[in-house]
Image 1 (cartoon, rainbow, N blue to C red):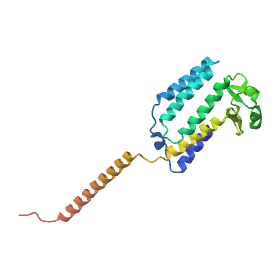
Image 2 (image 1 turned 90 degrees about the horizontal axis):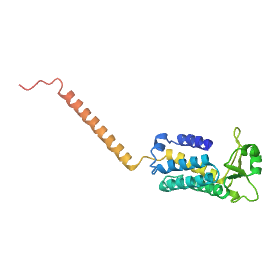
Image 3 (image 1 turned 60 degrees about the vertical axis):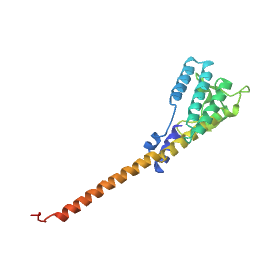
Image 4 (image 1 turned 90 degrees about the vertical axis):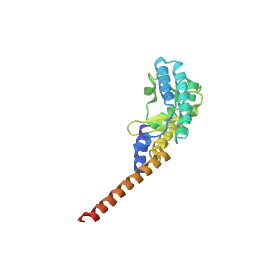
Length: 208
C-alpha cells in the first residue's frame, strides 16, 4: 500500500498534478470513516468473534462512505476490495494465508502467524479461499502475501491519488479566477491611461 501511494504521488506530480488539487476533493460523510476505524479498533482489542464482526461493520461503513463519494474516481475499486476482504474474514474468522504463496514470496508463514489472531493458515475447511492471502509479493525489504481485495484497494488508492491530483478546478473556481483576472487587467488599463493623460498634460501652461 505504501509503495502504491508513493508511486501514485510521484506519477501525479510528474503529470502536472498537485497536492492542493488532491486536498480539494469534495468528500462527504467523513464521520463514517471515523466510525469504521472505531469498529475495527474495538474488534481488534476484544478479539475472538468480535474481530471479524468489527471488521465487517468497519468495511460496511467504509463502503457506505465510498458510495456517498462514488463520483470521486477510485472509490469503486476501494469499495470492492474492502468488501472482498470483509467477506473472507467474516466467513473464516480470520484472513486465510496460503502456505504456497508465502513460500513463493519468501515469507515464513509459521513465524508470521504466531500470535497473530487476524490471520490463519489456509486449510481444507477454508471458505472463499480465492479471496484470501494467495498473491505473493516478493518485495526486496518486506515480502508479503496479499489478497485480491488488497490488490483492488491498492489500485483504487492509486487511481484516486493520481486522478485527484490532476482534477481541474471546479467551474465556480474557474469563473472566479477569470473575473479576478479581468478585474486586474481593467485596473492596469486604467492606470496606463491615467499615466498617458498626465504625460500629455505635463508642461502645459494653465489657463489664465
